[in-house]
Image 1 (cartoon, rainbow, N blue to C red):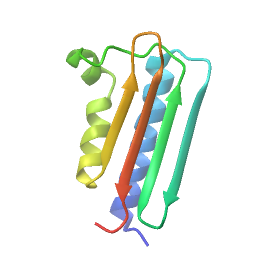
Image 2 (cartoon, rainbow, N blue to C red; image 1 turned 180 degrees about the vertical axis):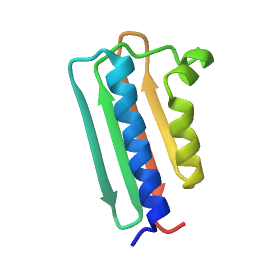
Image 3 (cartoon, rainbow, N blue to C red; image 1 turned 135 degrees about the horizontal axis):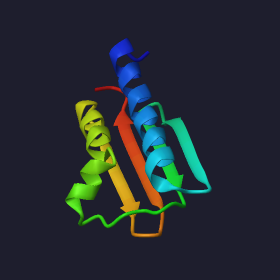
Image 4 (cartoon, helix red, strand yellow; image 1 turned 90 degrees about the vertical axis):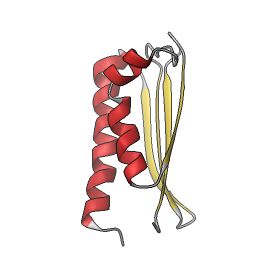
Amino acid sequence: SLSNEVNKEHYRIVQELMKNTIKQAQDNNFRLEVFELKNEYINVINEDDGLGFDMQDEQLKKGIGIQNIENRVSKLNGKITLDTAPNKGLAVIIEIPLNE
């Protein structure tokens, strides 16, 4: 079982993803999945069909809260993958190990 602190971090990651999607994406559709994979990882997948952004624009990346999510994922020894482009939506895939 996960500690309360780890559970709280998972919750805050999902909360930040949803807040960013609602605030920034201006999308019509989004998908959020949280699941356990092989008793080894918690996976979070968040996709929207919103505005997206240029991954080279560091100021924009920080402005939409991605930095907060990256910090929380790093704290849990996880990894985060972003797939986005202007007017192409955003996909965020997070993998957090259960046993670290």
